[in-house]
Length: 185
Image (tube, rainbow, N blue to C red):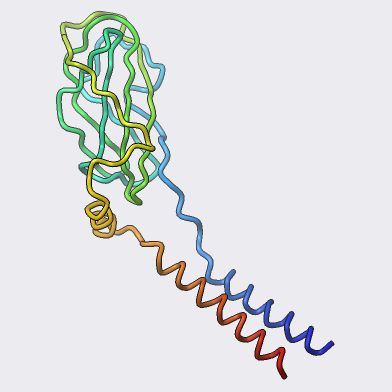
């Protein structure tokens, strides 16, 4: 009976140590809003599209397209990331109809986020666009080498996960060792 009580106490202490060392989960970035807003109806095309997310975005690994009803892309500048937003300059739009803003962006934690939002143009513009390049899906391999991404994620202040894994293994191992030692006496 005493042996069982000691084993239970050791298990309780190990569990308490794990709970006290727990921190909030690091969630992945999620799309929050766009400018122009999803579903908006516009008389004139926007000069820029901006997408806002729930986390800081990395610079250099992002893709945005604005594809019109004619299947052409109307992005005219480089994609820029600043804080939790990613934006790109849009050239003059073309025909009346629905335009889809496709995106694949990389958050500060290295997690890709992709999706589409859209708006409708009610007055034709003078733009001709260019051949639309498909936006890669979130499962697609990133264009940069994995080592370069890992280095950039660490330089951007993201916390690596390996210290938490090592800490959990050490705590569980210590709990088992204490339980076994108390069980022998």
